[in-house]
Length: 527
Image (tube, rainbow, N blue to C red; front, side, top):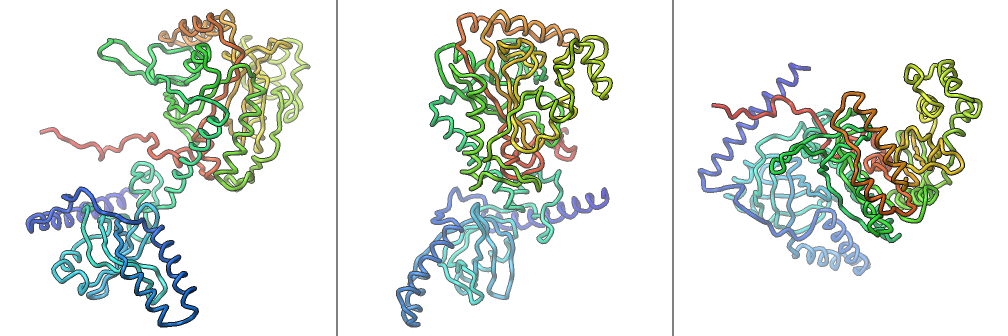
């Protein structure tokens, strides 16, 4: 494999030199292929094809089979000049006539270039161009003898010279790692990849439309934060030179959004970039996009209804159906979602009943019996053990949309306790394809309880060696002014896009996923 990669690199270097020689020759002849600043594109390829088909149909319909009228009508279409532009993707030479496939962002178009039409001098220059070059074509539309709609060139213009060859025609860009590293080349060679990101854009519009129609206000909150909070996620650290202080890239947008609810907004949301200095796998990237929303005077039950209806609406509008197939499994998003408490879910899938544990010791003994890992010693509570059972046995079973609610207080530091059972919180997560998709709370608005939970978080992190984390005292101050009863929910946009585009990895739905740089990508400018 190393020898093949070395050979490929050598070949690319040779081809690049050939194209550089062509470029230098052009410049010596007074032609600069990078000089033009614009080109008068009149229509995109996909639209051009549709327009021609409509006009052709109109001619055939009005002619009623009269060959002379058909010929005259088609000839009239040829009198209409069009301007298109795009990248040369293939080239078939047939003496003094050449056929090119030129692709723009909508589709490919066959272009017919003949010496008699563009002139001998222009044709000789044209013949020296390469696959990958970006060109402009002035011409008219016609249908070839083989029935393919094409543009007959009257003039061609080189708009940008490609110095590197595209991957070999029949194999294209297949190396997955290289596709992620060079997404621009992936998009050139695998145009279907663009469909994923077009759909991502559509999903984002649908999310915003849904929330805007409910009266939510979209806001922006800071990415750079002055303190590291005690949450479990590890932040990225940077430094502000003017303020002479370290700052932290945000790991959530939650606390600032709830400050706005304190300030008088009733419904807010943010589409926000989040940064977590943690591992990477098929469903995790160090930077990712979330949507967090907060609504005053509702609770986690209200947020359950909101997210279920949102997903059904978005899926129907984007996919044209509310039943999708993900990685070969049918997911019925449109059907009523199952709702189970965490206690019910563990009992359903393991037979273990939380109510049978009279003490924390009983719970730890049950965990040991079922080979469920919990913290050593006597620190694991019944809540910790319940969570461990859920992680070990339940999540992998949640293929169809399922809401799991009423989480132990041990892992829900920002959720309000259940009045009927203070050991649990009004929190839920929803799952699809054995993957957590989002998280929601009845938000904790008791500043005394919140401060105590923050202090426990910070103490635990400092005991683990992290001395930088702090209690967000300003957020406690905000709560002391009064946060109304509030429902909050956040979900990962990338995982939703994965689901609706049938993408196996989060890297497939990120245009530029995080990658470790290759050594050969580092330009040496030392003398």
